[in-house]
Figure 1 (cartoon, helix red, strand yellow):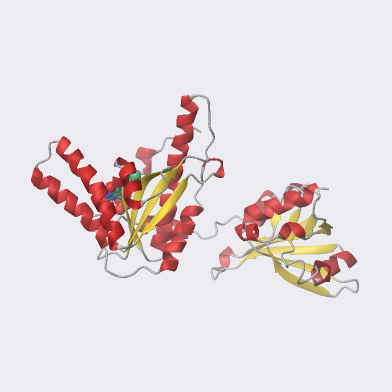
Figure 2 (spheres, helix red, strand yellow):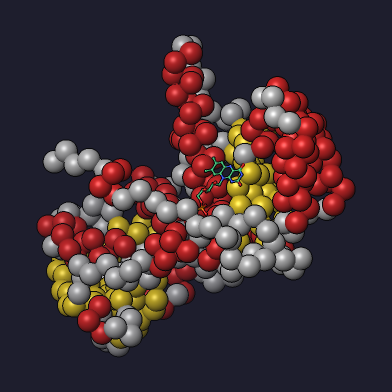
Length: 354
Ligand SMILES: Cc1cc2nc3c(=O)[nH]c(=O)nc-3n(C[C@H](O)[C@H](O)[C@H](O)COP(=O)(O)O)c2cc1C
């Protein structure tokens, strides 16, 4: 079996790996062509394609592409990029021989893992029960701007530049499906060992906000008084914080959850483990903030729960294993925020050590 890299150039391989859909062309014994769109994953020596039809509904051996491969294993796979900016058009075509991998074999298991790694939708599908198509590449051809970034100004960078902290909201309801998509973004954050050391509480009702505001307010009042702040200032800040909770249509409380993490005999490594989990809370929060902004919502970040986690757990009746960390407010901004923080230049933030 030749490694894909000995058949494809680096730019071709990189392009093929990054695309999400390709077309698989097969032909029957008489040479009649057949093409279907496919999801695929690339390994060192093969391209894999799942047969995701339910095994009982459609016996996979009746699928035209499968019958064709059994009659004639010569196939072609083409992955392409189309955009209205024609200087960005590109494709990679791989010619090779296809075979069917039977369930239970080592390569089949590895292929299913790869496919599920690339497409999370396969996690909920029993693709391990069907054969997997393996293409062993023999030749490759390509055309166009393989090396160009997918978009010259990445959309996500626009979102990153556009997002801002919002602290006043319109009294406009946030549809539940938008909240769900924000949570979905948080769920896909990177995490140590993939353990997802966070849980989310969604709060929308006034009574719940009241319990939360009271719990956090008491702690904050005590802290501000300890700092020697005047009674007037204390009252003003507490009322400001309360207003933010009631003003936002949706509150998203992000809690640290350490129970699934590795346990070490020494305190130092354990601290490292906890730090990673906290870093991952930040990643989940950022995912949520960016997707909220992309959905036309705005959001803000309140750190108050971090300073009284037990009170918050008690006020909301949460699992005692949760440690509230960040409270995100979600809604539609009531006007643009009055000030936008600038950022330090990259020159101040980055050193190059080539
Ligand atoms: C860990 C963390 C805690 C924060 N806590 C608060 C907070 O308690 N109250 C607040 O108004 N903003 C809070 N923020 C938001 C920052 O003030 C804000 O992100 C920063 O000023 C930059 O402004 P921008 O988000 O509009 O770009 C917090 C941000 C982070 C990352």
